[in-house]
Image (tube, rainbow, N blue to C red):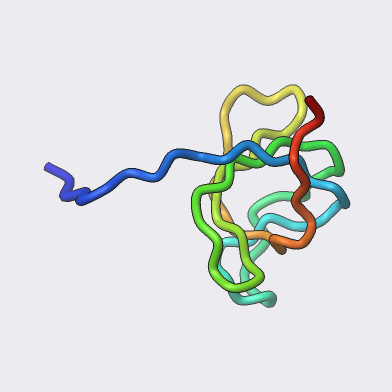
Length: 78
């Protein structure tokens, strides 16, 4: 059983500039993946200048969870 007092609904965002998805908030933490401009990011939480969520890279159906610089996220085009 998993105790989860609340769930967060993701907020769709698009990565505006190439960056790295990190394992933890620390800038020097392990890189999980390279992120290309235009990749989708399902934002789950903002912690200071860090965004935590699920990367949905172009052409990929599954996602990787990690942190990236929140200032690099933009609203998706309508």
